[in-house]
Image (cartoon, rainbow over all chains, first blue to last red; front, top):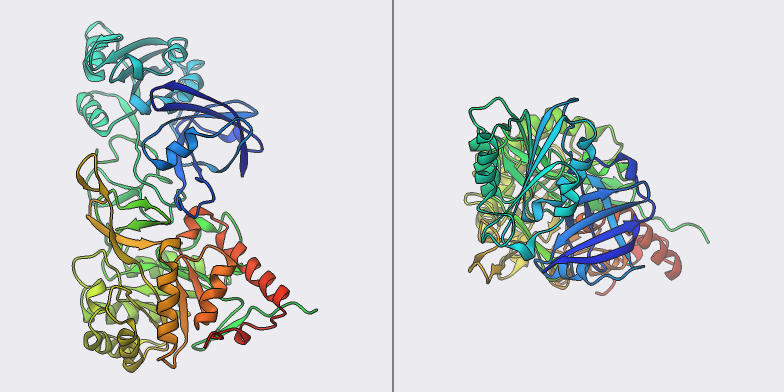
Amino acid sequence: MLLRVKDIANLAPDIWQITLSGDFPYKTVKPGQFIMIRIGSGKEHVLRRPISIAAVTEQSLTIVLRVVGRGTKWLSERCIGDLLDVLGPLGRGFPSPPQDAKVLIVGGGLGVPPLWLLGETIQAEADEVDVVLGFRSQRDCILTDEFSRLGHLVVTTDDGSFGIKGNVIEAVDSLRRSGHSWEYVYACGPLPMLRNLKRYFSNQDVKGYVSLEEHMACGVGACHGCVCLSEDRSLTRRICVNGPVFPWNEVCL
Amino acid sequence: MSYPDLSVKIAGLHLRNPVIPASGCFGFGREYAQFYPLNQLGAVAVKATTLKPRIGNPTPRVTEVCGGMLNAIGLANPGVDYVVRYELPWLANQDVPIIVNVAGETKAEYVEVVRRVCASGLAAAIELNVSCPNVAAGGMTFGVDPNILQDLVAAVKEVCTVPLFVKLSPNVTDIRESALAAQAGGADGLTLINTLLGMQIDIYRRRPVLANKTGGLSGPAIKPIAVRMVYEVASVVDIPIIGMGGIFTGEDAVEFIMAGASAVMVGTANFTNPLACPQIIGEIEEFMRKQGIRSLVEIRGCIG
């Protein structure tokens, strides 16, 4: 389907927020789902780019992307009014926690945007939401104002230029030592962060969900390009259709 | 003026039109049935199946390059017994002929997989995959030596109860030698080309993008090579050809038919546009109508 660029803004170096409007099943979008966007005519760039949905209203959806190559560069150069060929919403998103659950949301870098929609969705139901977001540096920080409205927010930066100096695991640990506890943990970010988080909670009675990313081709489960290994490494799971969100005890991180 | 006739007869198969999603680019059909009824297609070529399940290569195993993509999936599939029991029956109910792509590491494995697929009664044809560039054993090694290829095709032909197509590798000096070897072994038809071996390097990380280092190049970038190879092969064999390589439009498909192909397969374009195959069928029909072509036989191999 063709969606129109309603707004485009530069959030941080190389990071762009684009809001799209037009005919799209906005009401069916689950937090953690993604869209595949065609780049140009599709003949030079034959693969669509998978971008997670960061926010949705009844008439628009918002994505946040980092320019990492020629495709995302092209996306960052769109203007208000331009049309984008979009496939979606795709994939399985984050399951909602039960009423009054104690929830922790952990995001790293470009893993933060899909958690925004998750945070908004569960804010109403959850008892309390702790949010820990990690970035490299102050200039890379995004969506911190939005998250500060959703719950108790802790921001870390690798260089200490904003928030707490350190990584998200250290911040989670210090929250826990100060008395916080959680039944549900939702995370999206670099693989080492997800791996360490899963390990950190390995002996605790916590349900954890991680959103994974991988190079994708079809986005609909046909090509088997974007797979991850099951926890016991005996099977592959397709990130585009079996995920991108998985219970962390079902996948090998 | 009457509607043009898109139907084609190829190696005993009657297809309602010449457009077939290519193996590996369409799963076992289920994923694309949400976009259109699969009985719009000429046939469906399903993902390669092997004797035992395979999880494939490590990721990243797909990446984009200018005008195409590289893949190194590595023949990931759930194994022939699962495919025959759980995938093909569903697809067989979609009213579209099924071409089952078969791969193996040894001659005995190819023969056994073909035997089991034929025994299911669900395959309209077999496509022998002797051209996968992404596996250590088997795959392309069977397709690049004419003597080994002829011997393999002959062995498979003995147990194959449906038309047997052989998918040729372009990673050879002269693809006509492979084509003649497959024909001599008893192939009923040829499909070409499989992907061209390629590589992409991440210069910032100083390493190949694909975990497998190399992968198969597909997409518009390879189309002129594919058209040339279909033309070369058509000039030396007597068996029909299904052409493929970077077909994104009906006009692309017509090029292959004029080069000598009886039908075409569409691969990468399905990823760019899930509706690629039905659109290509419509564009072929429009081309025929505008050009006053009643049947594709009129233009097949017309460039001489």
